[in-house]
Amino acid sequence: MNTEKRMRLDHWLSVLVSVLVNAALFTAMIFYISFEPSRDTPPSKTMVIEASVPEEITEMEIEIIDDLSELSHATDETNHWNHFDHVEIDFEMPPEVVDTASAANLDILAGLLTDIVSPITMLGAGHGVPAGGGIRGFGDEGGSGNDLVGTLYDLKRNRDGEARRFSFSPDLRRMIDAGFSGPTMRDFYRVPKQLRLSHLFIPRTPADGAPEAFGVADYMEPRGWVVHYQGYIQPSVPGSFRFVGDFDDVIIVMINGQVVLESNWGAPATDWRPQQTFRHPGLLGRNLVYGDWIQIDNRPHRIDLIIGENPGGHVGGLLLVQNEKGQYREAANGRPILPLFTLHPFRRNDVDRFSTSSFELELNNVPFFGLPMRPAASGTPAINDDLVHIELL
Image 1: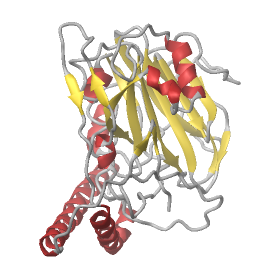
Image 2: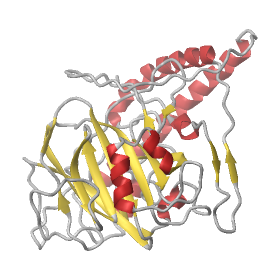
Image 3: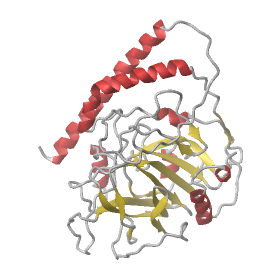
Image 4: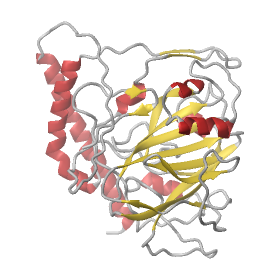
């Protein structure tokens, strides 16, 4: 079976399994709600789920991924946009009352349902179809629980939506130094909607692509923005890898809190510098930047992927990965034809998007970095300031 037919079969199998699982869960929820004795709703409780990373994993338990879509609605702030020219909009996010006891029971029920179909994970059909790159390349509202979670920040506004004078690289350095958390982040507006991303490949596109993907194109000027994607990865085959990429205006990759790649069209935002340089043009014509060789072994590793745009106009770029022991075809200029860094197999619409560019990718020998995980069984997943806390299996 050729690659195209296999991807098409995997895609439809993923969709079918997702529909069946969600239908079963919905039916169970309706049954539970119908027969649950009435009681007073207890006070709302929010549980912060701290990331727990095991030091060593010898055997990964295959599980269907629970959906984290509720994270995109979690916020405890009132956001005002009254300072935008010609627009006066007040975003109010009312507090959500959660019956924690019922939620815990339903989470247990959901876990039982996912255990029944967990072998399907081996075929790439997790709970929800992997996000891929979304329509514009910045991510998708759907996706599975182990995609990277992306948050858009507007550097031109503070947390309350008030205008501020921004300085792109220094502001980005402050965000990185703060770990995208704490009081520092109050200087930057955080868009409530979040997206999930499996890989990064964005051909040249207008700079309003990110605001549009995150649903704020009508209220956010398409410059001075940063998207922070975060999550955990584990290679399908452990080895020594390096990230290779370029993005207009900046792309930064951090593994376990350490910067291993920065490509910046302006002033650097970190102290990292490349150890090797090559004249290999990337997706938008500027030379690709080759990151540090790092050992990524058979355990979860924290990843932070940051992209951003400073003056506006157009954006675009991609993130590749190279295995130190890999053998790759070469382009005419000597560039190794590398695969995209990705958590999951590509979907048909992703491959179609790749074909819109003349930049050649390796699409057959592609390592996957997706990590099976699920949120904690009790309580409601919550955003603690600007970090998404996930409990690993």
